[in-house]
Amino acid sequence: MEEPKVELDDLEVNQERLKLNTNQLKNLRVYGSLNAGMIAGILGMDGWIGIGIYVAIFLIVSACLAIKMNFRVKEYFKSSYDAYYSGIGTDLLLFLMIWVIFHNLVNIL
Image (cartoon, rainbow, N blue to C red; front, side):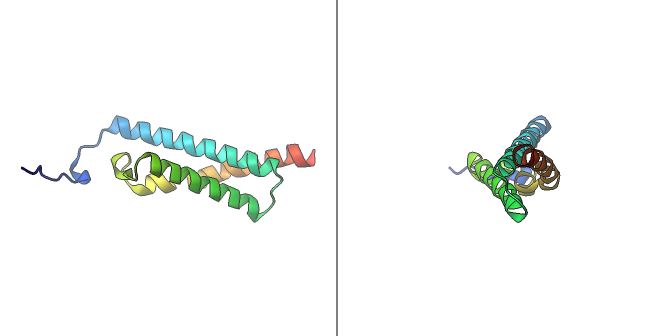
């Protein structure tokens, strides 16, 4: 006897878990941006190469996140956009700040 197939949209969302997942994702993105800024600053990257490091780290974090969730993002977040692209703008500003600070500390001073 086959069980009826349940769509993910039909499931009730646990708001506490959704908030916890979102907070953990935010923390993960912040740590990724901090590390990318430190790497770019310490290595003395300038211009578009530094931005490329940010994009690479952002994509690596997104890929690791997808692998950890077995590519079933909708089970943990409301949309796949939230998991893969949320925070790209605010984290970019954090990256730029850390990049400039570390670049000045290591290569200028």
